[in-house]
Length: 221
Ligand code: HEM
Ligand code: HEM
Image 1 (tube, rainbow, N blue to C red):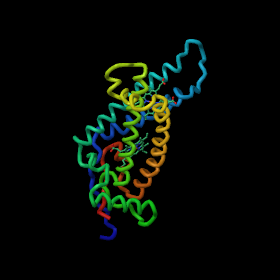
Image 2 (cartoon, rainbow, N blue to C red):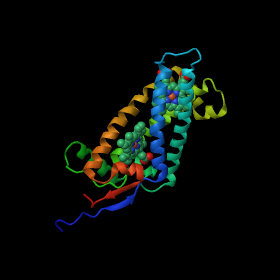
Image 3 (cartoon, rainbow, N blue to C red):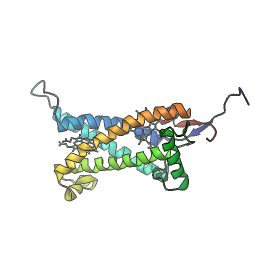
Image 4 (cartoon, rainbow, N blue to C red):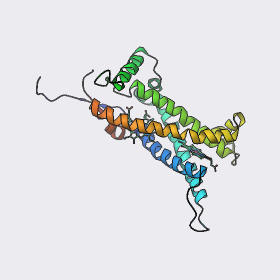
């Protein structure tokens, strides 16, 4: 009816473990990147001979590394235990409807359609990007613990990554551990831009959903 307020459905999409792992990872990745850059190229000069800057940076890097490991493990667990929106099945487009959604979202990004398709959870495009990002996360964890196992020869650190050093030269691991930080930040720039775009074009409360968990969906389009 003309003039009537549009009715939107309130849907609980992102459960607490999804939101927790998202925001703790944002913090952990920021700390890991700043301290990692320092470890690679120490850019601060000590102000006194008791300053132990490299020690602190390595301590922070490892602490954030353990936090990151726990959050990635939580999210992997939740992709089996959580609701349908966070399930592992959404991350790789295999079904006909996922492939169609991938095409439609791409068409929207290419200005071939004026509104984004109807998606209650991640779009197929976003979900696939997150899948690739998680592969990078796994490599960062294994390579990080491979570097750590170099001077902490414990069974736990060997299981968490030390085995990688048996397959790849440690200098190559260090190089790729550094290099893969850059695609993470390239992702973040595009991710924030697309979150803002999809929030304003979909008018579905997308940005708020990663804080509160709810999206507000209009009819299918
Ligand atoms: C280091 C920075 C960030 C990383 C690595 C990151 C990564 C991710 C990942 C992996 C997901 C999927 C969630 C899941 O299913 O577990 C996600 C979702 C989301 N993130 Fe981020 N994020 C970052 C920063 C941000 C920021 C700063 C914002 C807000 C401006 C944001 C807004 C969102 C939104 C709205 C979603 C849900 C989008 C959807 O339905 O696909 N993210 N993010
Ligand atoms: C997003 C995740 C991560 C990023 C962006 C990151 C970044 C970096 C960077 C840039 C370096 C310096 C490499 C160089 O020498 O040029 C580094 C070193 C290192 N990282 Fe990470 N890292 C991450 C995750 C982890 C994790 C999960 C661990 C496991 C505890 C870890 C452990 C280490 C260790 C042990 C070093 C070498 C420290 C040393 O040589 O004293 N990192 N990291």
